[in-house]
Length: 447
Image (cartoon, rainbow, N blue to C red; front, side):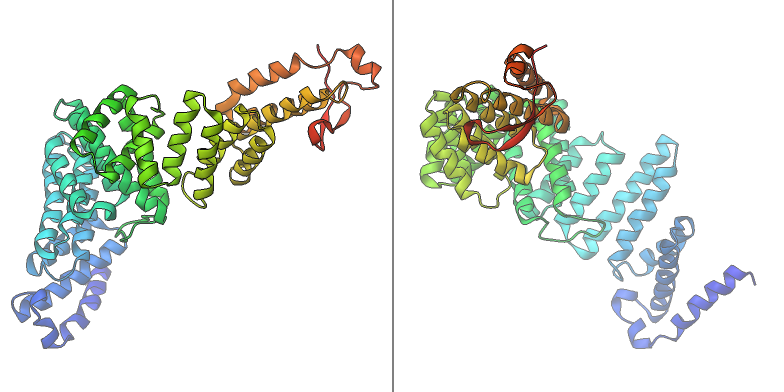
């Protein structure tokens, strides 16, 4: 007897000694003999799966599936791993299709035996999206059924796959922009619910379902939606939906979120939508929306009032940084530079490398120079240059704006002779006091 056979025999021996009553339970097979065979096959395949030896696991796994299909839910989870292993290594396209179907059958059998239809259909459809994406309509049907059943309990991967499947149908001319928007509203809302809770309400069998996966799902869904929808499309579809469901506050909330995310605040529907939502639910989002609308109309004082309301209501919400930053920008545009810098500093307290906040600080500092005479008035210019420079180095996305700001500051540097007259030389440390600041910067002269 080979060493391997000895090991297998040792593993199986204790199984034959299990109590007959236990072995005779229905889930282990129809007869006591079936039960012995079932437990043997389960033990064998499980040991091979632990070793990731899927080649040798296949035979005993098939044995367990045939003998006692109701014995273990894990048998179906492991079965999917085994089937994927053979599918991934197969090169022949025709054989890959057959192997893919055998993988899908594992999910179908699991539903027949253990239920959880919505959950399992979602996982099956993700496999189909990977291995047989050409079955687009069938994939969408599975994912739609899964999401309709589980709603906000849907896994991040299922929500992302659902919208991807709808996008694929749209590409094939089998779905419309209206559908893309309606389903985006629903899917993104489920994602946001999970992000707010930081994790899914139901665990996953094969991995983390925490906030990071839902963040990735949000990015994927947004990216697909923004490929399709322009502001005019969103505005027109929103108007149509609101005519159909004029009293649906949940629909209005979702639409407002989309219009804000896409920055479609100039759409005709936006004003009434923002006002309706603020009256019905004076939340951070609705206050922010009204603030944006008033800012575009030029009512900065009114806008700032609503932006401050949005900040105050958002004590620990997902969009805190967005509200703080926009409130600061509106305050700066209204000439309240101390408040603008205060909001910018709060943003930096959360995101120390936020380039937009650093630009806002730079502009606020620069504005202080108008209230001082030379040489004190040069201090804020040099300090603003520092902040523009820091924004550029920490956040490449604002590099162009930072370069413009630095150029504007450089044009206001004093000539060398003027600086020398006030006993200042290039590179010298300088304490800024103009505007009530107390920060150190570096003397710079015009080139």
